[in-house]
Length: 272
Ligand code: A3P
Image (cartoon, rainbow, N blue to C red; front, side, top):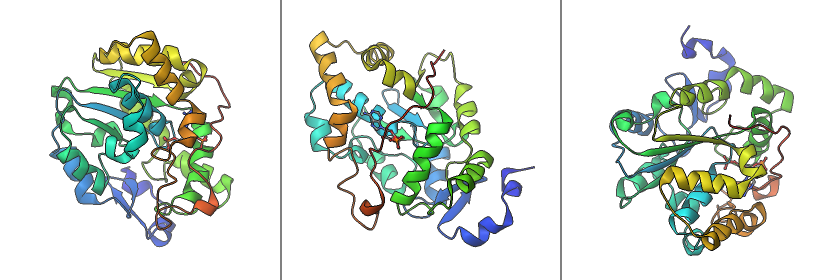
């Protein structure tokens, strides 16, 4: 059956703020069918693009910070002065696409789309994709709290109810399992690199070294120290340009939570 058919009927009734693009839910706020379609079918990936791809709540902003710091050789001026969605736009959002289209190359971008919605021309380019994967149990908990915090998402009911939706892919961006599977199909391609959130947590410096190697960037030991320092949970929690604290009340409910929550890893998983 198509994913459209898999959706329970009550979804159409109670999810006024979501729409479906090829069977996958997206929030109506900040997203549109036309934008996602444009990203999939018309947007041109360039050879020098770097794209940070994740399923939501897997460490997107963390990797965006790491990449921005690497590109600036550890200098935190950019990460301290530009909000994360300007320095690395979320490609498939309405605003993100506009930022990406005007972004002077080389571009740094984020995306949460499953591979089948990613710009079609990617496979003909040398653009580099970094995929961050996080243990789905931690993604679930992070997603659950984030859904109360951010107003574009439906307020979840109980964790049990949210778990059932998560497992059946009835959450925005669809099934975690399908997402990971879609991107793991690129394993082995020279312009695709993947790493886990847990590995970043266990060995941030070693992870940064691997990312630099993939990007072909050489950093001195001091520059590397600076990347590691400014990408730490504590430093990022204090960075207004990355901790979502500058978002207005129409977008997030600051009383109901915060973006930099606990960063808990219930399981230790390695990439290999
Ligand atoms: P928790 O909600 O478990 O705390 P995303 O950017 O994909 O939305 O992911 C958000 C998750 O990444 C949140 O997890 C957040 O705390 C965590 N995170 C962000 N920056 C981090 C950092 N420097 N170190 C560890 N975790 C970080």
